[in-house]
Image 1 (cartoon, rainbow, N blue to C red):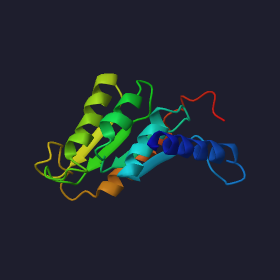
Image 2: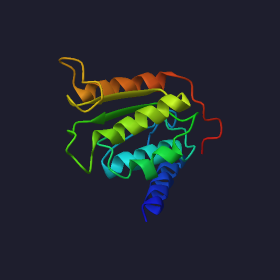
Image 3: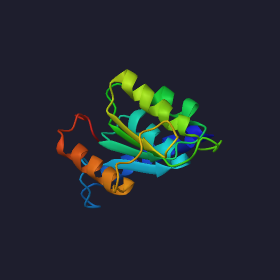
Length: 153
């Protein structure tokens, strides 16, 4: 049951928030990232659960995206930096899954940056840029904005 797994991951974030002082964490600077199934989990935890997540970097959105990500994206959710390096022949990590995320975010007014491989239908990374460096810059930028989460626990 994928939904049960995703909810369990949200509980892990709640645990870390509750122990922020003990674990020397800044609860106002939590961002999520994951690849494949982890991309689904990161988007779910960041959007379906109101946990004060600041930004999300999902990589290689898999075929479950239309069922396990798109319905949970919300207007007041954190910004997303989605990346897909697969070609159009990859049935599991088809670039359309990243495009679905981008299009839904655009409809909702959620900031979403998307990149992909040449021919994927997504913008290609700027010349000489590394996706991980861009993602870290995206995270750092999200940590500068005031927290929307007034009820964090």
